[in-house]
Length: 114
Image (cartoon, rainbow, N blue to C red; front, side, top):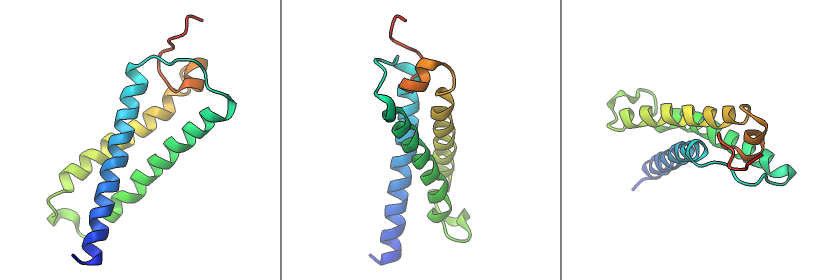
């Protein structure tokens, strides 16, 4: 196994992991109601992590297939994961602007009675 092949495999696995994590995080934020509000800096840390993961999806995509990516069998899966990861990352950030509770918890619905 050459270094280039190993690097391509690592990039592909990281790309899959980040895209799937963003998608599952979005599903979690939409389906599960938010609980107690976190302490002050932690919602910013959570938003920062979402931004870093979204940026990593955007930066890893061009590195998966050098020059002409049409000859690789994973192009279709990579394009689907790119679209889903992009929508999920932007969705996680947009959820924060829907209400005061969503700003703090990152969930679409609030599970608290107030």
